[in-house]
Image (cartoon, rainbow, N blue to C red; front, side, top):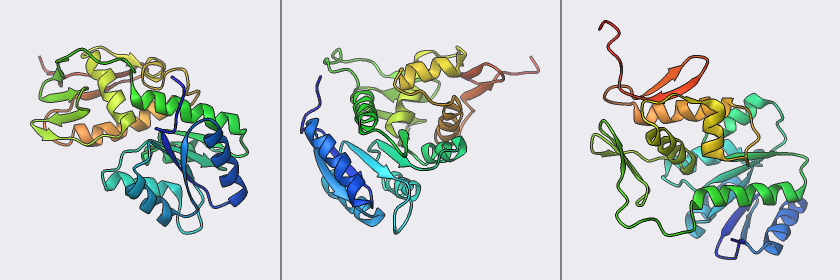
Length: 239
């Protein structure tokens, strides 16, 4: 489905020329755009307009995009974030994505790449456009429950707030309980073919997910060295 003004994008960039370029391209593609030039303005606009996606420059005059994203996540705002960054080191990108971002574009960039990334993130966040079956049962394993229709996760009856990407990753693991999934396999299932990134992004998101899911109770997310990850109860190695 083609994008429309029903999708609102918050563009946070302190360089007026780049901000205008991205804003004009998004508007021409049918999006409603809210511009901002600082981290403080981004926080304010995100709370006021509740955009569908945030295009966020990493280097801002009053703070950095990573801090802004962490602040939004701490406030319970899980709007997808596309980083614009001049930092080309993979480690820097991993840090950005681990702060709660969903994807990144490195500067200098072609505006068409930004549009493709925006479209891909919105498509992943929205999920299928067809109506889900009525009464679709939640995914369950042990005391972990994921309700796809309500977009809610709980463990031992306690709600667990997740970002959109974390939610998709957990749904992927829950859909294949006790089965080892390789990193490339997870990339394909969770990020589809739109993300041509390093598999270390999977490690980063698994780490984030563990911190939220495995805070209490038995550990459910396990590493299978040299292969990938598995959702299962701990094994009694002495048995």
